[in-house]
Length: 182
Picture 1 (cartoon, rainbow, N blue to C red):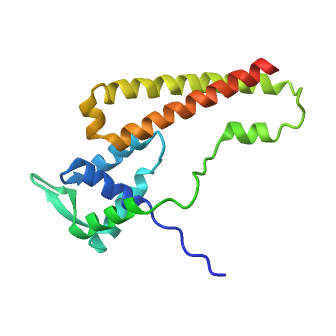
Picture 2 (picture 1 turned 180 degrees about the vertical axis):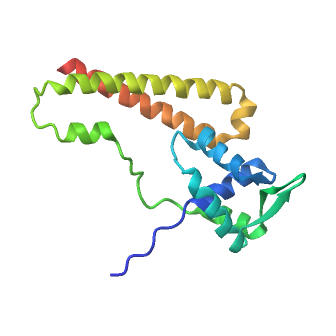
């Protein structure tokens, strides 16, 4: 059986950023957006963005233009084909559950004995990490979505952020309950 190559996701992310901005964007603006707004659930290396922009230009998903007053810097705009590709991709249901690399989970998996003295320390340090991350997520929610209008204008982002908050709350409860049982 021949396995199909994995679909490139980065072009869709870039098209989504362009669609969300509603204007031409530079490569730096794209990487900043990924780090600031998508970094909670998706990582993209800075070194991946520029080669992908070049491919997308060749594929006519975007156009490339010099920044006025700075001929070395480029800005990119989504084409009608790019918009169509993005709209189609957003409509396709996911066929797999999210896969996460979780160092805490892999460490716990390899501990064999229930009374292993490392378990309480691992649980406690994970509680501290999740608590810190939850505070960060809660502050992002206040910062980004303090009004009904801001929720309405970026509803998908709001949904993902609230999902992350709920997931972290559930994880924190599990960690605290597990530590209390020890």
